[in-house]
Image (cartoon, rainbow, N blue to C red; front, side, top):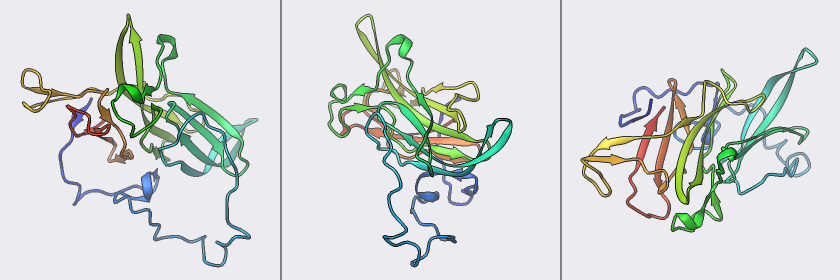
Length: 242
């Protein structure tokens, strides 16, 4: 299910308008060249500014994402709400009503029954993220299926031995429940004799890899990029497609 992806997107990368992604487009420019609402007359101090201060349980490295007019069922009738989704380094996702500031749901992306926690930065030999590492990258939302894809990092200790894992979650935008039989644990290996290779294969090491880049959904594949925590090795850059 997991495979390294090494290909050019130059001729075929088309982003569906139903996808909410990091910085608006595949180039991650942050530009919205089709803006129809915001103007120099209505973006001013008297009408434009902070609406709410919302409580979360940890640091936010991922960009919050906004979904307009999400349909909920209330008393058997459809209700539309503008939603904001926030992910934290404590492996928690929050869904807030963007207009009212009310909390709709939370999802804790840890297997607490086996003692999982976010990863203490002291385990990683780097202070690039402090004090813990959980959800670092910006998730991606597929509005066509009302699904958020998000990657979470976790640690568990079994009989005194620590292990580390990345999982890809598909969350229902309405409830936060996992979808499509997920989550999926991320594994990968590739032929090579580079630093840290074993028997002619370079293996994905969840402890030393850092999943910072925002996720991309394209043609039914979620692309996930990895690099390092403070250049602590032997790390390798990975681009995986699920």
